Every structure is written in structure tokens, then in C-alpha cells.
Image 1: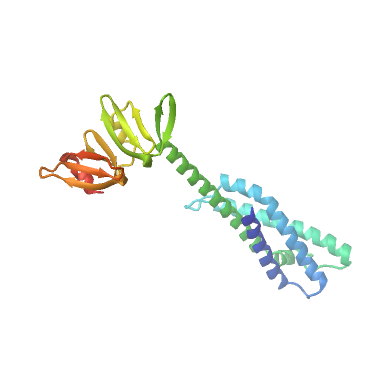
Image 2: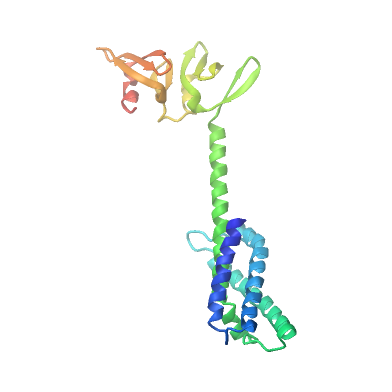
Length: 253
């Protein structure tokens, strides 16, 4: 909300600066006219922001330029309405308070004093601002869904837990199940080691033996024998044997 107000304020001030170029004097009447237009624009764009946010969600400008004409038409219409509302207020307040005519009583001067180009820029700035927010939220939701999807569901003593992959130290086979050795203890899953490994990141989890899958982040030392087999020393103090069949996996650590 604060960014939205700041963005609108910038264009309102810019419009006041440009509008000053088309005023006849520095008198209070001319300054009041600019102030009326500025206040009108500020409230108009803040009130319209909610609808612009909706349009941004439905007709967002994509990389191919689709819907640009549609968004341009909406922007021009919104700018014209803003100018019209401002002009009505100027006519009413100037004739009521100062009992004088205004240099912007005709629509040509009105479009110069309350610059339609600046209003159009304000519309597109708000549009892209809301499109950006929508993309950020979408990316954030996708990341959350991805993280939740990668969590491992385990059970122990009738209770279920969700494990983050980085909490798993290594996995070993045991009869018809696998045992997850984690920072939170041991958990049993009735699943094959091969299918379980497919749910984890292959860059982090390495198959080192037909019976072991290890988190490479916990590998502290690799000791090879003459025949190509060997053992791994983990940061947790555990020793795991590896097979030369999977030696290529360890080469990429």
C-alpha cells in the first residue's frame, strides 16, 4: 500500500510541475487550480487502484505484447475520466471561491494542465506494479508447494512427521523396507530404496551401494581400497561402505 501511494504521489507531483507551465500566473487562483487537480488525481488513482489490480490479474501485458491496445484503451479512458472529474471540480470551486474563470476551462487546456500522458503513465505504472506483485506471489506459492511436495512423510509410534530432505543423513535397506537415518532419529518406510531415491534431489543424494543412499552434504571423508571399493566417513561419525559400481556417483561430489 505504501509503495502504491508513493508511486501515485510521484506522478501527481510531476503533473503539478508540468501543469505549472500552462498557468498564466503565480497567483493563488492558479496555485489553487493545480492543488485541486493534484488532490483529485491522488484520490482518483488510489480509488481506481483496486480495479486496476483486478485488470492486471485478468489482462496482464505479456512478453508478446498481447492486450497492449486493450490496456492502452483502458488507461486512456481512466485518464480522461480523471481529467473530467478534476475539471468539474476546478470549474465549481474556482467560480465559487474566486468568482473568476480558469485558464483550463476548455478541454484542451485541461488536458495540458492535468497532463493526459502523465496520467497514462501513472495507469501503466500501477498496472505493472500489480502484475509484478502477482508474479512474486505466484512464484512464492510455487516454491512453497515445491517444498511441501519434496517433504518426506514418516511415521513413528503412531505419529506422522514431515521431514525436510536436508535432515536425512543416509538411507539403508532393511529386509522389505528402508531405514531413514536423520538428525531427528531413525524412521522406517515400506518402500524400495530405488523408488525413494527418485523423490530426492540427485545432485545431493548419491547412491553409493545397493544398500545405501547418502546425503553428500554429510560426507566428511572418502577412503578407497585397492579393488575400488571403500568406505565413507560421515560428519555424524558413521562409516558406510561404498561399492566401486557406484564410484562414479562419488566423483561428482
